[in-house]
Image (cartoon, rainbow, N blue to C red):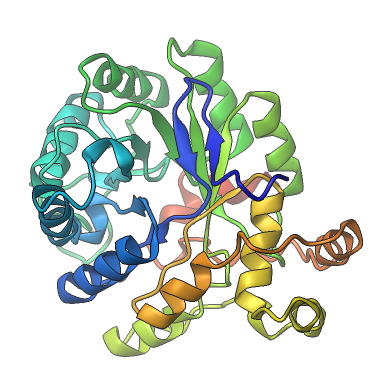
Length: 330
């Protein structure tokens, strides 16, 4: 791959930067500092979601940069997502308008359905609705086909340049592809050296769907986050500590994180590493000044353990829902 190429092309001609800033589990103050640091470093791709509850803080930083003349809106690529409680056709426009209001934007570059399973919330703030017994209220009536038609309407209305999916499996994507007028431009899923999703990558390539990897470094930050909120410690992938990765990093005088990101970039996968550390935000971006050899790429390919760690079982009842996406291999 030519090192001068910082973008991938979506099927509609849009260009998506190969690396973006992930913002999940960032507080408002953390995300302001992170987005400022990212923009100063050269990032132009910011990934967020209504569910993250940090869009407003991100919007403030974006507005400051645009108003000061430091960048133009068209230089940015902003992704946000429909919340689980928005998985009904009549709610899509409403939640996208709320996100646009938060982000202080007229449009987003990419709007994703966050998860194929919906929740039944009472209002815009009831993101994890529970009944009187404390059980999560799942939506068993949502229809992906009609939901997707509502997503298509957002493109036609100019509120989203492109639309896509997150955490969907190949069967679910196929149902949408076969009935869509505007096909998914992007699929955002967990992907890292221990979970390389080779069959899903091949499927998406066939349909010209660009993949974006969340958790590309194993998402170790979830351990601290869980401890902070008293949530059971999640399983994480220790890819950053892998000796094969370290050996390749030493050969290039790079860090293990940079090698892991570069590996996915050379597979034509977009990466959105999350960090609130200014030094790591800069480090994660310094992946365009070296190239992994074919032999190194093969060594990294062999690290695949099919080790999925984001299984959403912290949401009671979700793994038993008929649309649970991880019941099949890909």
